[in-house]
Length: 193
Image 1: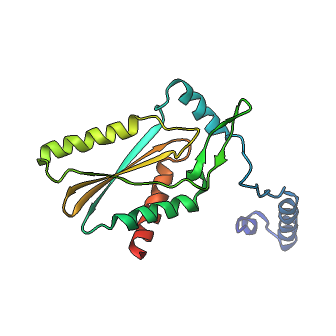
Image 2 (image 1 turned 90 degrees about the vertical axis):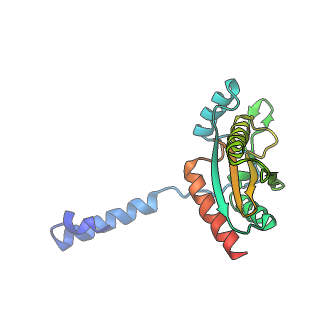
């Protein structure tokens, strides 16, 4: 690190610091690659969330909304979302109970089917209320932790060229930080298709 130049006033001390740093780096244990086909115990944070969900199954559900204007190919959108899910194993995770213990299981078959709702025939005021109701219901419904998926997506068509995409998630596998990554990848994939 650059700070060594400031911490060591002589070349001799600098060399000693560099050699000590190298020795520390070599002594660090290597990170092991885990076979993703194995069922793993939940992380500390996931275990904490699971305990909360035992008493309140929808307490840690989240939801966010994306608005689109223009032509939207729903098949490309669904394909893009499933590509993201394939890239990030955490989005394919479910939490079955095996021999009395909750474990993480990665399910390669998990795919998201976008549910669509057409509200084009509603008055704007009624449409806004209906979107609010759909979002509320989507976020309140408990997720099936044992079978997954822990992500639900609903596409609402509000006008011929306007859409609202609701993405509900369980905090076990997704959070606001994940949302930023998800949105960035969704835009990249949708634009490249």
